Each structure stands twice: as C-alpha cells, then as structure tokens.
Length: 265
Ligand SMILES: Nc1ncnc2c1ncn2[C@@H]1O[C@H](COP(=O)(O)OP(=O)(O)O)[C@@H](O)[C@H]1O
Ligand SMILES: [Mg+2]
Image 1 (cartoon, rainbow, N blue to C red):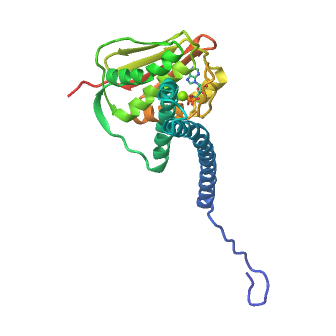
Image 2: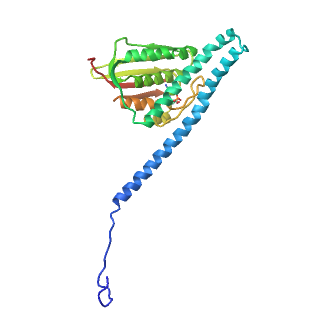
Image 3: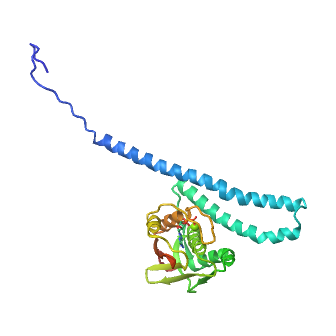
C-alpha cells in the first residue's frame, strides 16, 4: 500500500482457505479411481457375456435347428441332452450372478427381508447342483435336518449357497465329497460348506477376504468369472452376515457363513 507520496506504507495480505478445495480434489480423484475400476470390471463382464454365454446359447440354437431339419435324429438329440442340460446349468448360474451384479451396481438394491428356513434354501440349491456333482462323482452330504430360521432376503441367500456349493464341487477332484453342516447356537447360525479339493493359496485367500475379484480353473478345467464370491460377500454383508474361509493347499477348503438367528413369529 502506498501513502500520498507514493511511498510504501504497508502491506495487504490476502489468504484463501483452500481446505475445501483440497477435499473436493481428493474426492474427485477417489471417484475417478472407483469409476476406472468399475469400468474395467464392466469391460471384463462384457467379454464374459460374449464368450461364456454366446457359446452355449448358440450351441442349443444350432442343435434345435439341426434336429428340426432332420440332420440330427431324435435319438441323437436325446443323447446330447444331458451335456446340453449341464451346460445350461452353468449358464444359469453365470446369468444369475451377472444380473445380481448389474442390479447391485444400478440402484442401491434393496433388501426384501422375510422369515425363511435356510435348511430348505440349502436343500433346493443342493438339488439343483446335484447333476453337476454327479458328473464328477461327487457326493453332497447335507447334515442337520432341523429347520433353521433366519430373517433374510431369500433370493440373496439362494445365490450365496448356490455359489458356495458350486465352487466346492468345482474345486474338488472327481470321486470326492462336499459336506454341508449347520450349527445353530443361541444367537448366531453357522453353516459350513466343506470340500476336500485343491485348496486356496494364501495370496488368493487374501484377495477373497478383501473382495478382490479373480478366477482360476476348476479341477475338471471348468472356467469361471470371479463374480460369484464378490456377490456372496456383498449379499452376506447386506443381510448382516459374514464369511470365514479356512483352507489348506491340496487338502481342501471350508467356507463358514454366519447369520443372525431369529425365532419364527
Ligand atoms: N471351494 C473352493 N476351493 C478352492 N478355491 C476356491 C473355492 N471357492 C472359490 N475359490 C477360488 O476363488 C475364486 C473366485 O471364486 P468365484 O468368485 O466363485 O469365481 P469362479 O467364477 O472362478 O467360480 C475361484 O476361481 C477359486 O480360485
Ligand atoms: Mg464360482
């Protein structure tokens, strides 16, 4: 500042509080990072759709065409049916996971809580997967016949157990077994899905525990997407449950689901 004789008489300092700006900047950077990750996942799932869904669906389309036009006899068609049906079973699981993932990304997917008997949910999923298990000669043993009442979203629980049981089958060697057992105590219910398969290396265990998607081939070279466990974790969390994983390489793995227990009304 100058006085009337143009000499410096003082200084004026201007300060700007940029705390908020820095915060906004950080927020934007984090959002950009999240978007990038989401975009990468999206790209991955688009390529999964084209590889894993297109193949089997076009196969069935072709089979129907060939049978219809008499190039394949009815007898030959019937012989191919078990293989087709197994492929469709995989497609169904994949589609369900993809749809679940998509809707969880679109809207903050809401819970439909209801009283359900988990034993029935698990039994139904076991029956659905029996055909795939039979193919590898794997016995699925369900222990504990008592009803288990929980208050949870039925669709989400179906997806959780279907994924855990199908993984147990997938990562077992042929001629093995998968054990499912339930142990309710006073306030929590624990369901264990145990296999005697390949096991999970420490590095991958850490990824599973921190929700990082990855996929390795099953013991009969089954392919995958790494989407299942992401949804399992997310759905258990939404239903106030949790997941504990114990595993030993070449000895097998145990996935323990914990959910709050309730008395039926
Ligand atoms: N029961 C299991 N035994 C060994 N590895 C498992 C088991 N369940 C999951 N995994 C590992 O976790 C990965 C992710 O599982 P998931 O999300 O279901 O993907 P995928 O589509 O490969 O089945 C699997 O590819 C596998 O490496
Ligand atoms: Mg899986």
